[in-house]
Amino acid sequence: MQKVTKAVIPVAGYGTRFLPFTKAVPKPMLPILNKPALQVIAEEVVNSGITDILFIVGYKKEILESHFEKAEELETMLESKGKFDFLKEVQYPTGMANIKCVVQEVQNGTASAVALAEEFVNGEPFAVLFGDDVMYHDGRPVTGQLIDLYEKYGKTVLGCKRVGFDDVSKYAAVEFDKVLEDDVYNMVKVTEKPKKEEAKSDLAPLGRYVCSPKIFDIIRELKPGANGEYQFTDALDVEAHQNGALAYVFKGTRYDMGDRFGYLKANIEYGLRDKELGEKLKEYLKELV
Image (tube, rainbow, N blue to C red; front, side, top):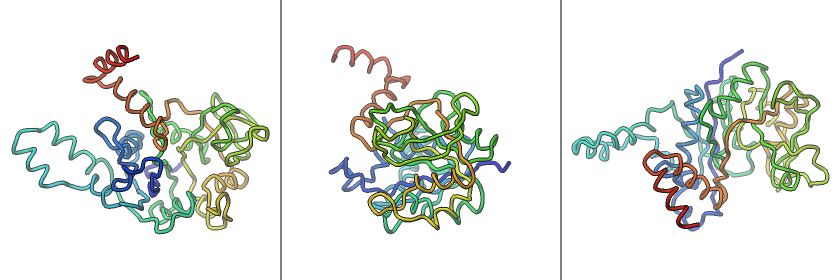
């Protein structure tokens, strides 16, 4: 089985729920403590064994790109002042992986964004991570868990969580016909934002996928779906029918960075885990509450 060494991360949205901040700064650059969310996501894939990353970028792309490029003036200043810890932090994003960017000129759906990665993928299996979703797990990263399953079964894998039937209409819902092992399901269908009474399960894919390169053939034939856009979920549904796919309930916590409350939760919980800030933040929260 071919190893998974490439990741595609679409981050071309406008981030309207975070206006006016996102008027000048792309939403993926929202910080979790002192790191942009996009770097946290990139670290997840690097720690999963990925060596090559493609960002699908759009609005204010130059700000996003500059974070992963050398900052010679800043690095020279930090070195001259002996601030080597800060220097190491500044230099890390530049060399963490082989990073490329491609611009999504027209934002007409998630499938269209992924389609721009075909040349980069070059016929290999690849991970897809959407920039609204930050995952935390203190063991094998979520993307790594999906890679392990792809390399075992040779099928596209959707990273899922049980979201409850009351909330499934906010997401997509996966249908399956059998359980292959603990938390691994043979997927037969996925439906974008089903009505509660029509959903067959509360398993929802949450922004992490490892895909067969055959998905590009499917995207090319895809018809517009919700809002007249080309939906990645629709491509995954066809993939399940044509080539087979798995739904996997991953181990870890998901933070919705497209939502202001999800963003606050990420910062609070990462802060509580931080060696320097954890105890001080815990005491502050106790006093506050």
